[in-house]
Length: 385
Image (cartoon, rainbow, N blue to C red):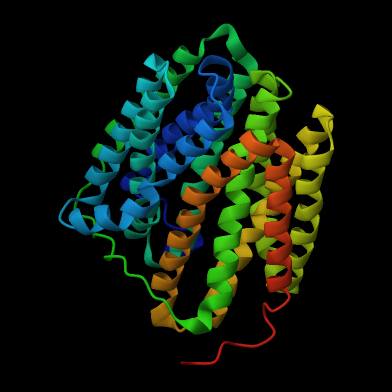
């Protein structure tokens, strides 16, 4: 008699469709990420304060995730995902006609609304389609297909460069989003809906809240202004930016599992302390060093140490009551988006008023505060209140 346990179940047709859609989405995202900052610097000629407003506007849909989820509980998740991909396609393809910052802000808002609608659905759809004992594995595979697509998109930009115009790149990226929307619309629709999100604020989790907020500040300083400084101050070519992002994408693919194993072996506290100490040097280097090739290395190092943010989730999982875990993580996402809206505005003002090094010195101060707080991680479990 054939023993079926020897051969693990193959993914369902629904999962294969989801992975194909996520792969196509990843290609579009890689194209977008590799071209956007050169586009706004060279073509739109955006100024620091305008960039701050653009990034703040682009992060606003992060707050709307909870509203969207509450309003769409009766819509099948694959259809809602397809709609999110259509929004991303409309936002990105519309950028091919943009010549002014206000219109760019509108297009970015539409694109971001689609992205933030999709983000919580990716895990939900995957888990509903996966076998009971394969859920973690399938989640990793879904993320892997998205990362592979993004790497392919970035590599394409690296190879082709400006032989294709920015407008052409945005149309191509939007086309991949549209393909993803069509494929996702073919996924069966009898899939459960995500739970309505709720937020939990408890003082015993205040260290997690603080670290998450500060991590949002640190991430947004670098995400908003690091590539912008390379393109505006050092006139870095599109292909170099694509190469840097390609390197970062590959690091993320292979580095995340390594960080996960390190967390199991040495714990969150030591990893956070090491990464924060290194990131202080990265930010100060960005503020003090004026050699583009050194800044390229620092940019990749920031991405490497960003992987340590996994520690915040595993730390929360260890200290939280089971019923508090998901709503508290949702509160962390909200606090992260508060930082994502405020920091670009403040950073853009500092850049315009005092020069770009001050923005990165401010980031170094944020990381130093994170370092101080991280010394308390894992010392004891929070007292129940």
